[in-house]
Image (tube, rainbow over all chains, first blue to last red; front, side):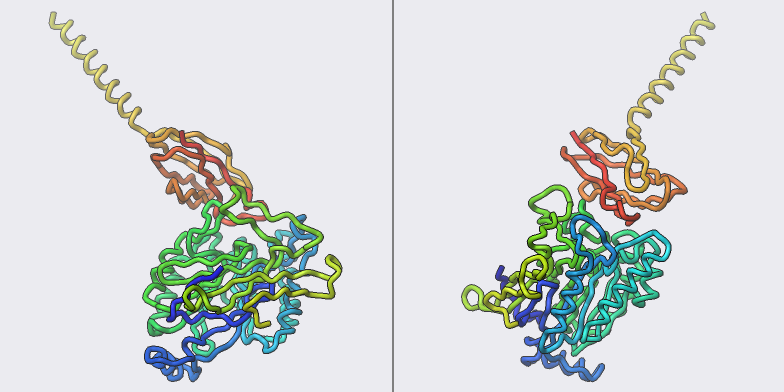
Length: 333
Length: 118
């Protein structure tokens, strides 16, 4: 899939992806210079000493640690393999974003705590130590996020990294698919500090637009959130929840969904019922993760964003030695 | 004679009052009661008539739930202490799936019902 890129968009991509999520390179447009770009760069330098400069990040989503079911009897294997693959990257990603459903809920006393601890133990193997999280409904909806906060801290927050402003939004812990008035007010105050040209990455669990409401793929007040963000020109939204790759443009933002690390959901435009894609023991991670995003020449030599899949397999199922990455043109890994 | 007129007037007043009450009842939307508990709605299917107003009165039996159908503009938050209701007039025929959109546990994804409009 090739998509024309607006020159002002800063999310371009260097080769990337792992079949385990998305590895995204930021900032070449801003780092390249130009008058408005220079203003933003200088602004960030004045504000926090960080200048816009290229870097890589990985987005992971929906590990559902603790899930047991026929749609993936291998438990945490895909998740653990993803950690190994990320640790093999050179250079290492500076930042890892996990967009919710780290764990699968349990109402057995003490069990959800064990699952959260197991998740932390697995992510603790990452060489890259800057890992940021938002909750999914399976982590935080049954107790209002109380247990999640014990393990991972606040459910919404923001920070800057190399001149990019990152905003973690919680659209799950109220129990319903909503950000809520208080968080939207916080968001208004948070981004009011930034110029409209500043690069902004929002990461959250559910889509902020109506992707498939009867599958619960929406956020009730997502329109309000996007309205708050609308004055800003460089907004990218990273999310999970739908267990499949998706790219969607709204008026002022581009939305990327990461695949899951446990099971996939089908294309919602082709089926009426929301049921996980059946497990294939020959290809246990078929449809999981692996998307490649790469900048390449599109029609008329215009810059375009290419998205390719990379297939991840496991030796014990496919006879391959560890992870097999099938790189296609445009990949730099 | 005077007595007959009084009786006739009384009957007329009673008749008019009854007619007004009947008319008022006819203009009241039909009420459909729905029960919500983990992880089902009861009934799990209803049929409505296009262009006719209906009030959906939804009661949560056990804990908080949601009742959501985007196309029919249904968006209810349910709590066990009192029923929630919404009055709609479906304008388009079809099959609409309403869901619980308040995460309520491991079977939450299957908590839905069908609203047919014909």
